[in-house]
Amino acid sequence: MKFLSHFFTTVNQSLILSVLLLSIASFFLRISQTDILDLPYIVQICGVFFTYLPVIFAISISLSLTKNQSGAALTALIGYFVFTKGLTVLSADAHMGIFAGLVIGCVSGYIHNRYISISLPKNLKFIGHEGVVLIVMTVVSMFLSIFFSIFWSGLESSIEKFAIWLTGMNNLGLFGFEFFNKLLMPFGLSQPISPMILPNSADFASAFGTIIQNDSLNYFTRTQGSGIFMSGGFPTATFGAAGCALAIIWTAKDKNKKIVRSIMGLTAAVSFLTGISAPLEFTFMFFSFPLYIVYAFLSALAGPIMRFFDVILGYAYAPGLLDYIEGIRLSSHPLRFFPVGVLFFFLYFFIFSFCINVLKLKTIGTIGADEGLEGKTNDKIEVPVEVEPIPAQEKVPEEPQQAQPQLFPIPDDVPKEFETAAKYVDFLGGTENIRSMKMETTTINFEVSDSKPIDEIAIRKLGAKGVLINEAGIVQVIVGSEVRIVGDKIRKFLDAKNLQKEKV
Image (cartoon, one colour):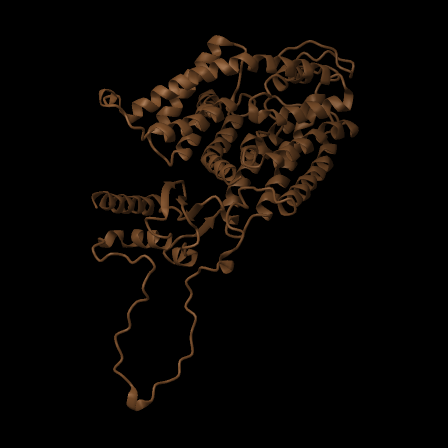
């Protein structure tokens, strides 16, 4: 259980930066479309993030699992290209999407850690450890492509047949369409459902009395009865996303709130305006899959409820505010959408809050130690002790007051520029306690053997904005804009100390 917690925490942390970049790209991608600013150059550039999102995920996860080893990026890249090319050759109909990136990221991280220090015979040493890792990754990726080509296309075909059957089931069909579309997205299997009904062609008669060939196209060409499968996306992507984000911010630990507020606020705003909810979903999709199931269930309720209130809305790109304004002239009872949206805001907020607080489902806001700073038992706070005064005739000359000895004293030969770095290492339990470190945009992540010696208060006094510790042994030191300066000095100090140990 501890291994899984550590694994999903690492994967989640590796995706945060990608999620933030994806949010910004989503916004500019939407406003650059032909129906708004019409900037095809920006569309092509921002589209790169979505086209290569599986590759970005593969590299990010591999780097996190290998403690930021630079060779892991090349391992993941080679593995992804071999895997996807092999999959295309063996089964052109197999589309794994982001799930391919997740698989390759995890496999490449494991292979890199397993074979990077392997002992090689003398006649094979010219290959090098990195060469062995790349060779093993290439072979494994080929076998993975064979494995997934056997059953993936069949699985997609089965889901497509299920989707065609489901769309003829009235309200149950609306519910099932959105539920399975959301639920299968992390596995790259939502393609057989959503594109078949919305942007692609699949002719079949629905129970609503129309031929659904292309729900989006039919809506904007005023085909009667169209838009029923698009309407349910609006309450979730707009008001629901806001309620979901607010619940995660509201339930976050006090020391996490600042970062969580920035991440969730940005992803919720992008979802509300553009209808692109993927960045928000990625913040908990893999880290807390039970919470994502709750999210999918609430999303599925939107279709039947919108139909109950006779609200028909459509979108050309995604179910956000911009597309709502664009398609309002073709909609049915568009103003009724707002009370439905408010209902979904409170549904998401209260149900998510209940799941996080009562059911203890984790989010990026609840990562860390259960205690706050005031609850730490190992804080180095001096407790005054009453001592009886020494009689005047027995008083001894006062000795110069010396600094309180540290648990891991800083050697006298530490250069002045590395004194702060040495103190960070000291308050993190010393070089023996630090297993690895990795720098993010504003934080330095340490993997430690034991969290008991860590002095959070002392670290904060050095200038850190906060310290987050979780049960998997991951310590996040929030430094801020100077993270690179501080992190580089800590890394150099650790490298120097480890080199001294090797010489001894």
